[in-house]
Length: 431
Image (tube, rainbow, N blue to C red):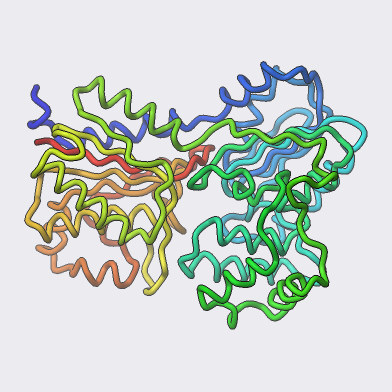
């Protein structure tokens, strides 16, 4: 069957399973440990992918105790390890308990070896605030940061300077233990110090830079008073900085990237190419506001259709990364839903209907504060909303893409996948 006659939505739906499978973390951890001469260690795992990452440890390493911190509702018993279910995307008392436990286990490993497994979501799941901050202070600061449109690099530069766990401080607590930090990236650019706020990684950012982020995005005035005071004291040199590159306290720590968004993109590229699509990976570090990124991707799609650049149709364009949403309305949605909706709205504006489709989903299966992983959209689905009396521009204004997409069957639901390698976008062009 020629690709021009394929149902693009059905093709996009078939890719959802591939995204989930290509995002698995256990095999990547096992392969790394197979090259390491360690035989036993204390294990700390934190993040949305912590259960999968620990599966890669079992049978490859004797465990001397430790703790797994995983999102609420995703834990299960693992012999020899404590399991803590914690809160995401906003920290709460369970995050505080998790933070205290990982610090205890880090200190317990001081005479031996510590394996730290970090995946996306660890920043909220594990927290031990600097004195005199409370977990409520950190939660309120996190809420403001997530809603202001800051990048994950900027958000985590602030988080690291409010915490006794983040920004390399967990490895400091374990010193002089031999520490290995294995990271599964959920951030554009795969910077280890940003993934999960880098609990075992030297932190190049400063209190002053963190303070500047709060001013740049105009949340300085709404932050808890104690948060502002801690950042200002740090910027004035009244607080000890996070450990920097070259710190003696990190001299026995080695960190490695074991899984990243590009791995998923390359797997999808191979599958789509074997199915007859001319395939191009645009980037694995997509950033920017979701609706603007959606419009930009629509422009590229239109060039593929009309001019055959940067790739000839039938085509698939692949991208990954983490966009942001500046919350303006009171609706429900997520960065992937908003990106896909904006893409389809732009395509419809320029007169396209059935020539292309987009899949935009998070590899962790959770987009925003919803039960959806993302969306599959075509311009025709926007047209269907219009015929039902829905103003698509009002949908974006209200940040209510979840409600609109649910109406026309555009949502992708996988449930929590046990991984987190950032978001994936696949654009399919049929002619």
